[in-house]
Length: 135
Length: 135
Image (tube, rainbow over all chains, first blue to last red; front, side):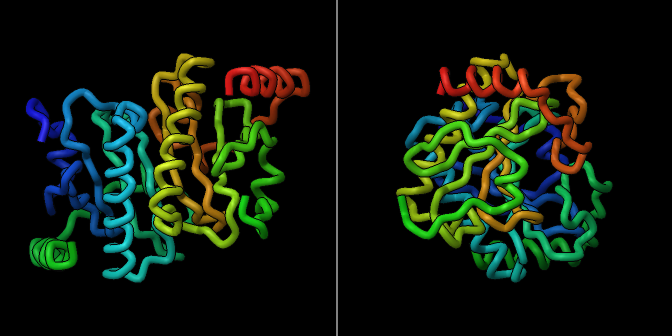
């Protein structure tokens, strides 16, 4: 863990931490419309994928793969969407989202499509339990 | 090059080939609103990032980095957006897009935001020349 890393306030407010992996914090987006993980490399000052070292890029791809396979296993997703945008929150973060034919934004992207629908308390606890068991 | 790869018709229609790298075809999207590259790993049957071997994932990250750095160098982009969605075109392809504060979709994603504005013939030739010189 590199010192000096602090999760951006917007990401902290929009998500719940699920796990800490070798490179990334693994966060669950507070939007019950979609099974939606966000990976944040826990290093200060990153804004772009190409800011990561080559070694860390390989670790990131492994963590994206792991997150994707968990979403497929838990939710039988039709498609995984992976994106690193950062137009609104500059801290480097990577979305890994389970998509389903006929979901609220299908076939468009989820970003900006709708306001989030927060999880009910019990549903959030269940989602976190299932993720933590599988991760 | 693995045999049996054919570029999806939609990608072929929406883009112009710029280069062939060790893993990916490098394509320029026919949308003059944004400097927008698409990387397509030239292997048959891929739909998800996690379908790639670990070795090819590392090559892909290197090629995403190379494409991103070229867009930053040529266009002084404010942000690079990287995304693998595939909700409409199942063949695995990775968008690498130069974004600017105040561009037509800023700060939202470009996908689905507007119809493309095709390049004029001369502008397309110039864009391809500049890319090929820099790539």
